[in-house]
Image (cartoon, rainbow over all chains, first blue to last red; front, side, top):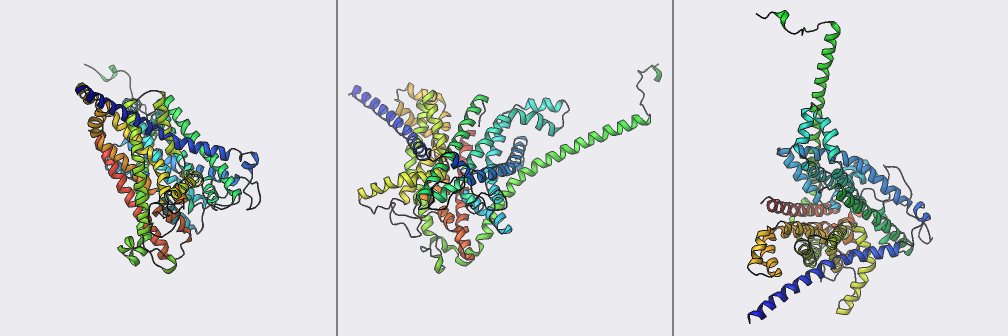
Length: 282
Length: 320
């Protein structure tokens, strides 16, 4: 009786262990399925022609996604230019003033901003930039994406700088360096790996964001480099063409999906390798 | 007696050039102090910018949804008909759609994310296989939502459609069930990674004591690890819920986009986020637009509250 009960308990234990294994590894399946399917559907569409041409009208085969590539890159660069300096400075502020009341509210706001649904950011950017200027523009798209980048950059900067020993800063200050030089010449260079990985993660995150661009950058079937005009971007192109009824457009969307997916995965994996190499804790 | 001439010669040099030099040096120090103050102030301003940004977002949403709050009143939230053509606005179909799809997604994803957390936190904290699993699960969060949506539209919807016809429901394919499946995949990483770090925090002497009493592995997990990490796991699930509520693109692409009240979980519907995405640029009447923004405001407030509660729980848990 005793032995059989022990056997029952052990069996139950193993049973749950195996169940855990199965459920845990089932999570890998969707990612593999998505990767496999997108690569299979997208890889035949990508060639040089695809990268340097703009989409053809419905009915004609061929055409590419050059407008979306250029648009995505431009929008992301402008968003980074807005968000990275503010984000790093705010992160430095938070790590330098851990106890002040402003820092408390700033930390809270960063948490809130991180959780705001992307579509809400799109609405707000519409009212801040699109409506006053009277037209959809790439610039407003960049501003919306910058708002999404900010919390990630702030958080990673703060977390990285918090881990640096205080003695480092004190030594530099004792040598008579002014505070801003201590920050720029000692603190930021030492923590640059963590800050950079935060920046890369935030870029990876905004590259795939569609919702904030729907009412801001809006999309554009032609190649445009004017920041005050509507501009196409990769996720917008995927959304518009994937939900269209035309097969030629689906093909374009598959190719664009593959490029977007590879770029995002590359950024993520690269960041991971870098953080492991430099032993950064994020 | 010491006279002045015995002291080491340190006469203050008062030639005109020396005075000029000293003045210059003093000015430089002052300038440096001023730059330092300006720099410190810039840092605080950057901190302030973020606060202003969040307040601005909230204010903009409130101000822009005022027309609809005034015109429709609080019953907007539970009126059942949405018909902009005849100026009838009721948000209930979208609230219901959001709640149904998010909670269904949560229920589907919880076993998986907790399994990942237990696997990585308890069974195999180290090694290449757990590492692979951890990185893969994190990559799930990295895939853009528009790609989930496209994949769902092309692959998942046909599968769901044949499943629906096999159980005798009207085979639409797109609908709340499909979007819940996609959402479930998308939110696994949030609860899983948080749960893993929480399980890592369980003191080993508690587990060893249980093993010493003769508990099996499962019994240790069941009666030591899970009770200890209860609040942390709950916080992870809350954060996943916050994600699911605000998710726009993937849901918009597979939910079917109809403003009728969904009759079952297989019926097409609309969520708050997806209706904004679909109709925002088409809204031609002020009240219509403002009704959509009010949905955004509700979404914003709900996700903020959920996220803040989740973060509070995590803070308390990790500080103990």
